[in-house]
Length: 460
Image (cartoon, rainbow, N blue to C red; front, top):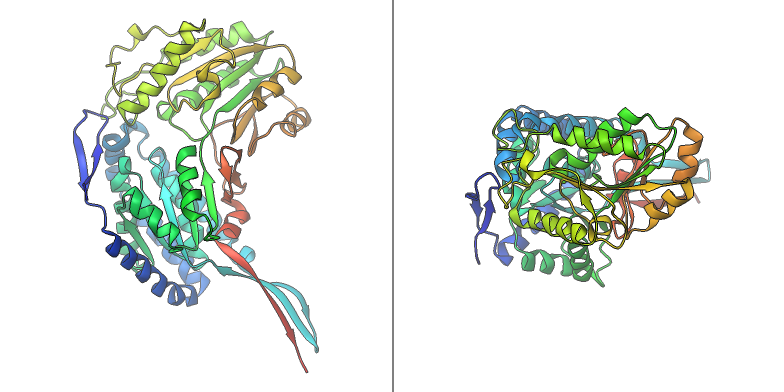
């Protein structure tokens, strides 16, 4: 077996290196998780909630270390490095608050003759395969409800953020969550797939590429193991004629460029009503030119490197192809001298784009956005739906009913009005089409990690 290396985008050095578990050791870890699941589920719900919240509190206490490690691992500017902790706490608190009501038995009848009710049982061993772009938030979305509901969890984190899994395990174990109830493991692809194929897990949650999700489905074929898949996005924004222009520019540009564009629900394409198009583009260019590309270790940096130079190459290739096909780039790379042709990539806004270009159809996952002019809601809706993905869509208008009517016609998991790139723990995080299936957060997040069980009890 070869060691798994974490190459830092800061300077291309090996920041961390870990040996993956041999298949026998990986199976032993799963066996320990399965043995621990019954006793964990037997603990009172309030106790499980308290331990999960204590784990998050311990993690939050490490936030300065976390911020520095994230800068080295995936390039997020250190000024933003503690930002995930707010979301981790908010999501854990919300799922904790609704757990008792959501997981409580639903009574149908309790009489002298019958007691009938629906209960929810934990699935068993939950396997989380987490991504690097929001490594703590994407993990906690499943980790918190899974543990609260009485499951044990095996976490495999992305090679780009190897230390995140270790920090999570450290925090939860120090808080009192038993070692076998939550385990962080380092696995290669072959061992991961063989475990899934052997029905080692009762639920698999994967966040990553469409190809990765397809590999998960192939591995699980015939096992009937439920899968939760969040796989990709090409999230659109639509700016109507009645939009607040300044608010739209500020939020949509932030949604396109924050985290170097490496956000699951980042804005990747924008459609603007013709009456606002020129002003929107002008203000957007000024907004982006105000960013500073540089080392994520510099407190002044607002745009760090992409997590890996191969990710940046995908974006550069998309931009170059679009420009060759007639697109017009509006950001001068000379304004961003830190662009090194590798992981450090200058942001870009493109106009004169269309849906024949990859930059408008395929996931970019980088600091580039294409902007198109439209003349009507109908044209915007058709363009927004002309995508293999469906995670979120952002509509900019002054009217709730208009936003809802447009949203009803968009093939997407979440409809935003006058905001973007945001997760509300009270609402289900879900997608459609090639974005995947299943959902996390909200009361439905508990349904993903539990199964219904019916009790039909009769007195004779």
